[in-house]
Length: 123
Image (cartoon, rainbow, N blue to C red; front, top):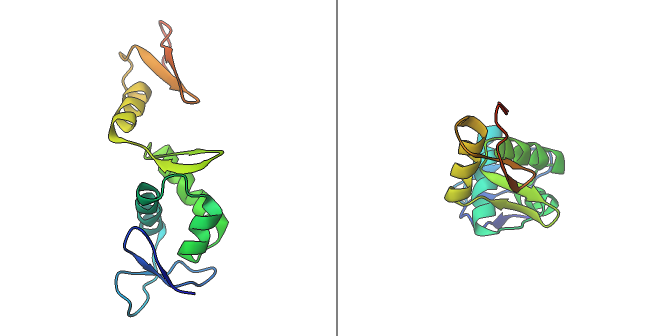
């Protein structure tokens, strides 16, 4: 079954292959980066989307979506939780990045909780 996503990308409903085309014409095989881009943009349009729903929309396996979400989470672009995944606002992205990489930052973020950085804590 073919469908349009909220991100304006046409997906051909096929299992095991990631088929994304910008037109209703010929399907195009995509790589991991293209899938990550698609997942991110769908999460912007549909916050809280469940991985199984994303897999169904993309026509790929849930494992591929989970791998994509892990890559996006590592890149500090999305957050996954029990209610689904969501794209992070720019302010949260910047705070996460600063807390992770700026050793002079006075705080750290652990499990979504902001804590004062302990002196000498070089995480």
